Image (cartoon, rainbow, N blue to C red; front, side, top):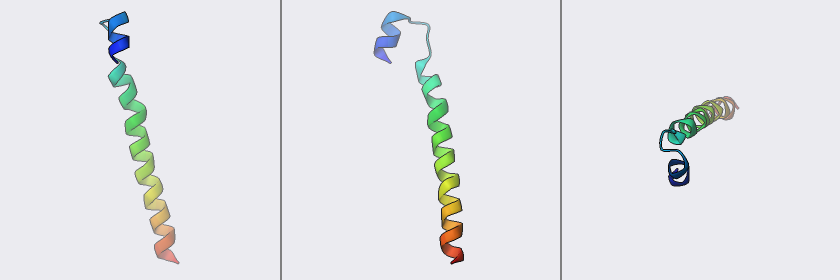
Length: 42
């Protein structure tokens, strides 16, 4: 982020990085729930 701010002080790299990060957390939670459902159903 420091390199990006040095080249352009008006950019918001952190917010662009947070989108995929949040999507990954949500996806992992859904995948864990599906896997738990199948494991507990056995």
